[in-house]
Length: 568
Image (cartoon, rainbow, N blue to C red):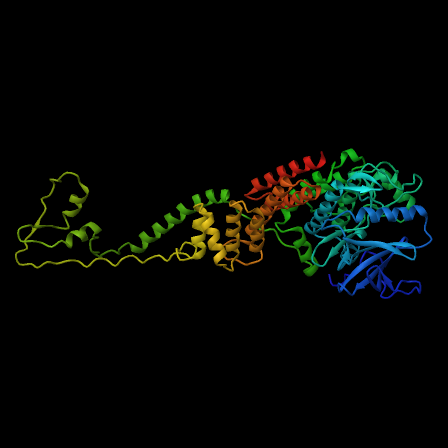
């Protein structure tokens, strides 16, 4: 991965601007270099001295048509209204010498186009992880409401999904950019029936024919990009423009299975469904695509997609999915193993202690017999011998078979057998010890004494992830949902030997989603609804396919509930 270059938009990088007409100052800072150039715009890097940060500024080229300028203006208006972690952030807009520009975040990373050019095909889990994060951005964009040219719009179709517009930061974050030809759902702006707008290699067949576009148009492009990530080759590899156009219109491409012979069949079906010729045969919305995508992804990795991408960028390796045994599976395993182990131990003990021929081992003495021997023998009361003790101890009625012998005691002193040494005291584990602060806190929380537990939590802090996890549970059961998810988040940052990192992360995701749902229910708004939906998606991804899959099912119900309200 060292060969990857840092670029802003997949365009060729220049160290210094050469044109004398290049601005010295632009937007909020000073121009430091040219990040990329295209036919319609130039992307500059600027330095903002007040904030001490670099930013990117996309400046439109002069001498372009009025329609092109209108399209750029539309990109500015649409992108500035989209606020999502997987969409490039817009800071401000303006003009320089009459030319419009967008000032946006400077991405420390590279484009997917550059990655594929340098490394070729990607491991399936990495390709799926990138697709998941792109789909999150599109799921948000397709549902967002905004005002455009004085009219209320709902949802925006990107219309130009391609590797050059998918940025990857060095921490594994995916950023979708360039909404230059985006359109509100079911609305076509600045279109020319005689001119195809978009990237021919990735656009959907209906887009080539200048037909109406919708969410399924972006889904088709996702399928083409995923095809390229998995195979390392373009779906329609031809240098002749007319040949590419004809192949695109008929969807004539080599099946992915001919390039990648060892992929799970579900991946073949997913790519094929995305790339169906007719929109009605594809996934009908990104939510439907995400559900299938996450089912496949969870079969390959338990890690968050961003972590998978980051590891691939840093080391060139991918995590291996570990086999997990659920509690339900452990029951039959333990039920079969334990009796076998006990039987083997018993046989071994018997063999080890069996006496050799000719040996005369002393008779075994029971605890009852030992107790009898410790009794003081008085002259007027004979003692029961050890031989008679078992019959007296075990039989409810006298056994007449043999008369017990009596031991005279006139010339004997009291003789006692010293008691056996007490068994060793088993040391309690720290979690079970009453002196352990966490055990005390856990007992209070389990007993429902939440107010006393909270006072103890506030009085003393323990630097252990299990402490914050228990504190989060206590706050959650007390109705302090915001504080609960904040404490749960802290538990993911502090190591612990008592509770796994995955368990703490699951608690944090669940508590955060519940809090955001409650916030939305209390003060409904589109932003609050979208935040809650995004949070529940992460809960679903975390618990789906695990022993706690009921939480994933509940997350789906919350996504459906809030989405239904959101779409009404």
